[in-house]
Image (cartoon, rainbow, N blue to C red; front, side):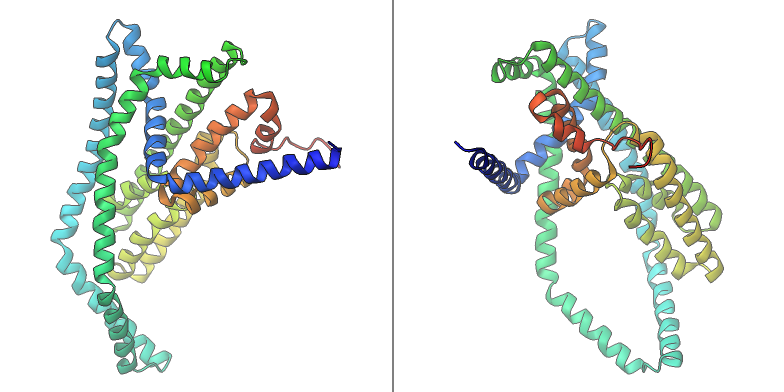
Length: 353
């Protein structure tokens, strides 16, 4: 076969394979998202299980203790948020009253400065309200379906985590049979490096989330923002969505400060949020997380876009750890080494080009 024809055939095969993979990822997204979360949690808990097993504890009990510790941590965070949420709900009528006063003052401002009459404003508001009510049935149905799906996933993920941890030797033997021509030490290196990368990334991410949550709790409390612990913890938790979560987390405290605080304090809240975002994006995350996942920023952004396009919000959360796993695999497979280089950080320039 001529060289040009061979090159065209290989290129067409790669493009077709990529399209088939993307289609498969989309159509099987429910089960793949579930398995991806379970795999990542299993890799995170693997060192704890191995440590307990080295002390002589049976694997079954080691996994049970690891899962119990994880559930206790999650339950503690949910309890803290629930307490703040209960206080928030009890003060809801007060918040509604403040919102009405703020809207009234905004209407007065628009009427005086932009010559938009109150009648026109109320007409537009009524039209938007009717539109929301018309779509409320669809919204409620979608929300109910989403909640059922989330609850089902929360039940199934620990079960699959248990299976991944309990049968890990079985899966390792399966991989050695799938790749019989690959040396055992190479497969072991890939699995060990994959586990270490995911563990380091998740631990680093947890440290960033904890740092941002503590900083915002202190700052919001000092500036008089209502429910500072709730908004502080929420801002930390939403960092699980890279790049996007920090912006979503800042919307709520700013809105509450607009309604309940003076203009000067509102400006202070906005300045505080901007400062925390700057420090988090330029110092905390690169220092704590950036060294754990050696993926260049362009690839990270592309992975986030693809993840969101195919899997939505779960895709945003899973994009970076899955990309890091892919990089480890590519780096250890000679035929894919070039793709591992492409995913990695670009080498520093030593001189002019």
